[in-house]
Image 1 (spheres, rainbow, N blue to C red):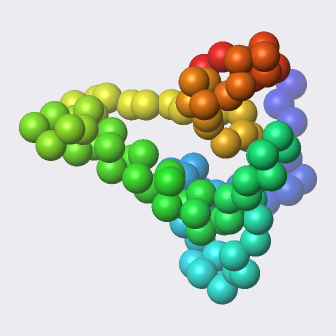
Image 2: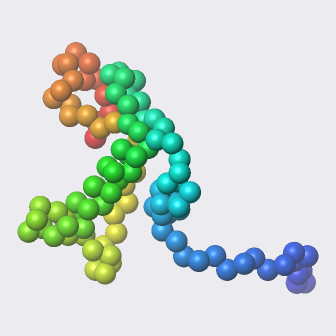
Length: 107
């Protein structure tokens, strides 16, 4: 037996990049520059716009050619990078006092 939905068909959803959905929406230009991340050990803060700048710097480094120090990862070559990260400020473990390193996640 076939049951038809009582609701109208779903609208077509255009393909979108999740980066643009989360970080590239036009209304975000009018947002205040709120604190996005706080390092609980040092109190260091990163604002929303500083975070966006770091994301864009990372994307630039991935796509820039190797002759300029980048990794030259290109979508036209079917190369994709997925980055999963904790909500933390990345630290160089050598800058942490030796007796406190066991509390830091290994990257």
